[in-house]
Amino acid sequence: MTDKKLIGVDLGGTTAKFAILTADGEIQQRWSIDTNILDDGSHIIPDIIDSLKDHMKLYNMDASDFLGIGMGSPGTVDLEQGTVIGAYNLNWKTLQFPKRDIEAATGIPFAIDNDVNVAALGEQWKGAGDKSKNVTLVALGTGIGGGIVADGLLLHGTAGSAGEIGHVTVDPNGYLCTCGKKGCLETVASATGVVRVARDMAEEFAGDSQLKQILDNGDEISSKIVFDCAKTGDKLALMIVDKVCYYLGLALGNLGNMLNPEYILIGGGVSAAGDFLLTRVQSYFEQFTFPNVRNTTHIRLATLGNTAGVIGAASLALK
Image (cartoon, rainbow, N blue to C red; front, side, top):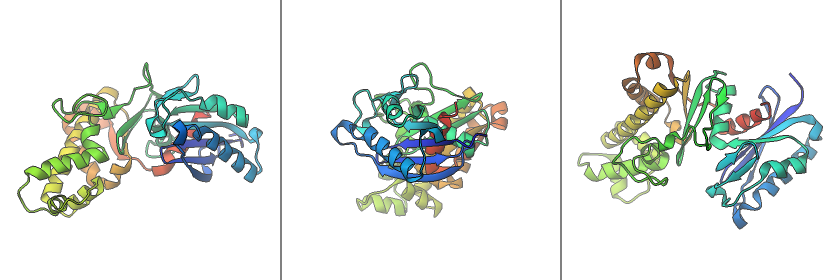
């Protein structure tokens, strides 16, 4: 392997994370900066450039020391042009040119992809995907994102929407989603979706429940609180978790039946519920898959956490 390095950038709504890695994916340096979304996000790319230049200077490195820079970004990414549009959590309403601007400023080749796609690449390369050529990542956060690696290639689809498992319909008469249609997985199994299911189920629940008391008192709850209550045997919380896992198992079952990946990895904040979540989703997954998929597609928890994005982003520089 070359001794030239890779740079990975994971751009998010609150922070931009950076890493310098070896060509075989070992992180050597990590840092982050706040994402300044003021003035239509016009400071974001200049801030990234400044931070890259500062750290290259700090480590006595120049463009010739690097194979490339890879970046994961929210929004709709044009891989060829290296542009991004519609990243609303960054205030990017108009077309942005990260590839053009960052290459010009650093002199280092640059590649970009969607943030969940690069997290999927990171998990496939250095995480729970074990370098398998068929890995799907489902990221359960405020929303639900997905990234699909099939036969070694990241799937994008004709307009970049491949892997949007958050918008798979799991309940045709369900909640209205921000995308405009009803019953998306995101409305019931994301962090916000779990809370929404909890509030509705609590209204109809009459038994003894600590979670119901918290809600009846008007206190805020989170998906973590719901799962923590369920782990103590709280009846209402267990019913909520079962419903959420049913919808997740249904969606992942359909994903498995269609793609038959070796691993479906569950990541994002909600996955912190760990095996308590995994075993329940697994049991519904088995119910909704046919034998060949049931026996060959394995559900696992993602393992890289916050570093999946920078590792996967850096891997773009190798492609």
